[in-house]
Length: 144
Image (tube, rainbow, N blue to C red; front, side, top):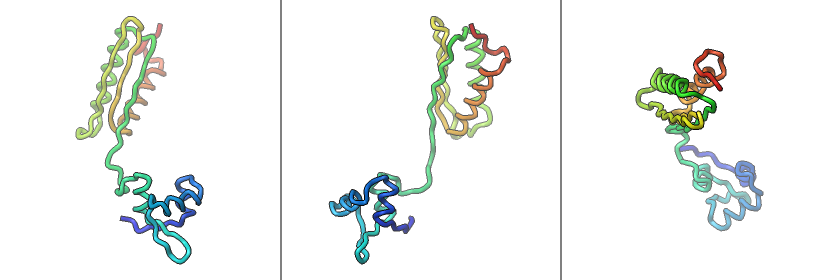
């Protein structure tokens, strides 16, 4: 646990508040502070309690959800894209934190929707793969 102490001015700057507002929080008991001489000092833990920031500085996990909608795709191209995306999701990733992917094809609108849920890095890699396939002239997707 950190023993950092902040002045009223530092807290006001961090929270984008006026100094008087921070002093009001202290007087009302909303923000705990210690008076040292004529100035208040606010402990990092008390500032974290006010802002709702977790006490642990380490982030335990990050999960990203992405929805990709592709217009003008025929059924065969949607099937190929679905296979590619699922293969990409199951390749070179942490088995303890797999990407979850779902694809939906709307025949009437010729629209494919791909939903991806997983870690930020793995999701970004999969989106880069998909972007490369869709932007490249590789014949995988024929647009009408």
